[in-house]
Image (cartoon, rainbow, N blue to C red; front, side):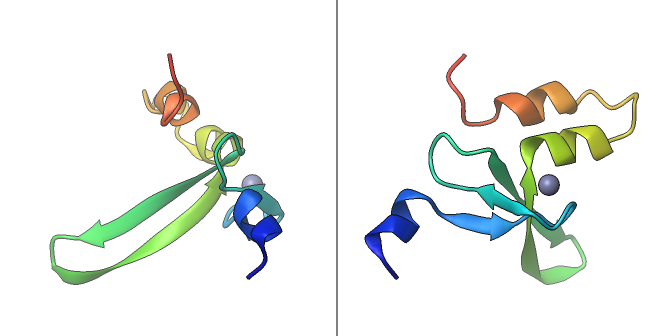
Length: 72
Ligand SMILES: [Zn+2]
């Protein structure tokens, strides 16, 4: 891994398939997926906007998705 990789850590968005930046100030977020049925988890990587726009129109979460981790 190169120092440039840490300065700009990118992964493919699980919604649109293009790169999203997960480093501070980037446009990406991660979601932990878990179940009450038992152990194990996975992670979904997404652009903030891809996640926010995929949620149901009546969901209250899009504004929160856009603000997670950012100073208000
Ligand atoms: Zn995306």
